[in-house]
Image 1 (cartoon, rainbow, N blue to C red):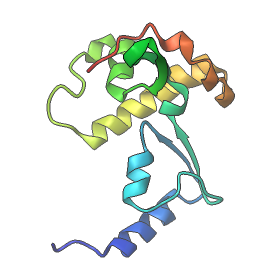
Image 2 (image 1 turned 180 degrees about the vertical axis):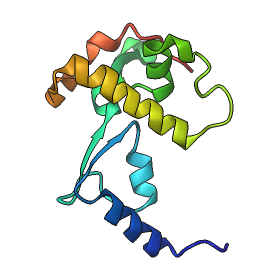
Image 3 (image 1 turned 135 degrees about the vertical axis):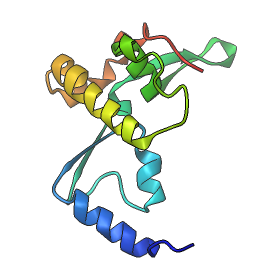
Image 4 (image 1 turned 45 degrees about the horizontal axis):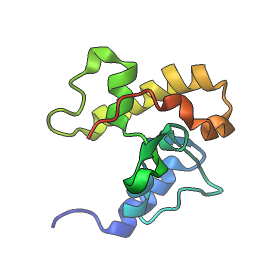
Amino acid sequence: INGKPFEEVKNQVEEQINGKLIITCGGKTDFRALDLPMSSEGFTVFDLQWYYKREVEAEGGMTSVCPMKLKELVKFYFPDHRDFQDAAHSSAIDAVATMRIFREIYVKTSGGDANRHENYKIFNNIPRLK
């Protein structure tokens, strides 16, 4: 009710991310909420869900490829954080977890090859959370 006008906030966000690499996990909805594109000449976006996918069995025995949840990745790669997202949601904690996965797992295992995300079958062994 007493917040800043939408366009002012959107412009501030655009200024903050200009010239930067934005790391997200499922960030499509965040960008959509701000009416911002996921790609721009001003900034670069890398979404962990573009890389971390798995096959999921659908009705009729068919399989589809679905992005993995941040919660699944954190609980698999960092077993000491088994209680991640079990209580109230915190965007700050999610941001820290996203960067930890990017720096400690993705960068070290992908060799920086962003195109390697098509090899999603290597993640089928990560437990699926509902």
